[in-house]
Length: 248
Image (cartoon, rainbow, N blue to C red):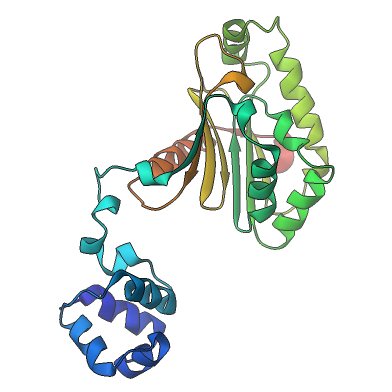
């Protein structure tokens, strides 16, 4: 018996007849699903949509690619040799399209903060509509920033770039739903999350930020590469101190 399907129907308050009507099948077909038969993929997607669930949650046996340890390459939307190769319209679409969550993690990323003329107002509006915005920057005075500056061979300018990025964020101070934090972690990659999409830039030795490779990811599984980097953000975020200090 498909216990997951039955539980989802109970949560959605739909009986077999109501679900059958919602997806355009005979009620006997729903009964067979409840007995264990797995529908075709198109129907699985329709049922998942009707119940507010995911296909993998209802029929995990039909999505082996979303099982722990499975290949996660399907989550890679695009791969770029350098972050600078990502088209401007991709960044703009990710920022404008986010509705529930924006999580940004790096040393300094002023390029993203000045992406659009109204970036700060856009972020403020999203927070006002219920989105959670978390911006994590490196503490410009921490030892790791000096180390990163030396690795990138940028002549002691990284602390200033971070302060410049923080200055961009002044209009966000005190905005409900927006949090800014400073970390002291030696990063191995930067993470830019927009709802269920993400740009990850692995950090290369002696390469500067715009020279790092970049992966555009879309979340498909709780066990995939997206989830791994989302978890990294959460772990590092827990170490941050608020900026300005009275913000939390």
